[in-house]
Amino acid sequence: MIDCPCCATKIEGYALPDQLHKLRDGEVVLYKRPESSRWQARFKLPDGAWHNLSTKRASLDEARRIAGEAYDEARFRFKTGQSPVSRRFKDVARLTIAELENAKAAGHGKAIHKDYKQALEKYFIPYFGSKHIDLINDADMMQFEAWRAQQMKRSPAASTLLNHNAALRRVFETAIANGWILHAKVPAMRAVGRKSERRPSFSYDEWRKIGNTLWRWVDKATSERSKQIRELLWDYVMILANTGMRTGTEAYNLKWKHISWAKDRNGDPYLSVAVDGKTGKREFVARHRCETFFKRNQSRFPELAKMSFDELLKAKLDVYVFRMRNGKRSENLYKVFNDYLVEHGLLKDKQGDSRSLYSLRHMYATTRIVIDKLDIHTLAVQMGTSVAMIEKHYSHLTAAMAADVLAGRRHDPEKAAEGRKAKAAANKPPA
Image (tube, rainbow, N blue to C red; front, side):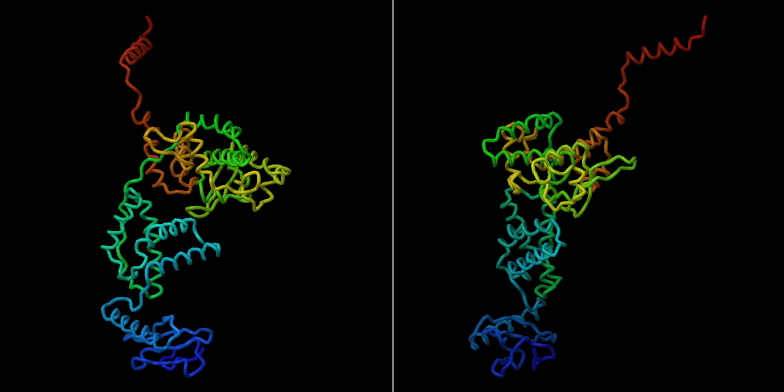
């Protein structure tokens, strides 16, 4: 590394006089790094800032042409109020994805980053890919919204749009940080989507049917692998339904070390479960019957079965809970549960909406509100969501629960007359 002869900064690089060339009155400098045969370029703009780029050429004449064209374009962009140097959207998006993956590898990534990556790869990169990021404007965004709705075959929900906007915002933040777009040039992002519909759940009778048929369905498996997946599904369904845990990241990554005994204010024990999912790390209370389901899961593994349940929890094993007997983890539980629902006539609810494993979480919320009379603030903490989200999807239940109080006692004229007669007789003075 030596001083650049044109400015006070350092250049990684060149060692011989013939590896340094100037053009445009010294405003553009070409140089080679010792380990490379290709020419690098630096150029200076009217604001005094120097910019770097690779010409990707070994030929000096070609490198001169490319560097000169890049310099002229950068000057034009500077004069017209644009970022002097830009990048294509796909390059910035892939850099952003790499940053998200690096954060995950370093241990401080978030579960939502998986959704960001999916949105970028499935929608934004295919549409904006080759367009320079600083040239994307409000009109482009509106055209993209129409294209995305066409790809989805429906208008996306507002929650989906918020996730997509967050992903796109990360890309623009990367571009701003690298000087590839000016902050003022970032286009507007809208999040006006269709309202989220009431989510499909299971009624009490339907849940009883699941409880009475799922274990029999396990025994009907026609192969060892099928039986192991169905066994795993049985545990998975029962635990989801009795915890409100999110299927996917929260449940899939649950390990035995995350489960422990705790005591309530009366000193009675309960199972506390720690998860790391969509809303970050949290702990929740499992219903007492989950002890049976966790023990059943434990009994399928010889290395775990030799311990008591208490010993297993105290061991804090770094071992996944939801595994098949052979120790492998299955990502087919969504499909297997769908097959079960179809076979038992439980796939569609009364509105014709398809149920899934996520419907167990909604059933949990419904049951806690209707049967346990749990207040929505406590339920929100338990489920790792906001009070606003609980109110949005389950407020109809709290209103129904309070209907008997709000309406008062039903008026019955005959009973009222009988009541008046009884009261008068009771108040009649003795003869």
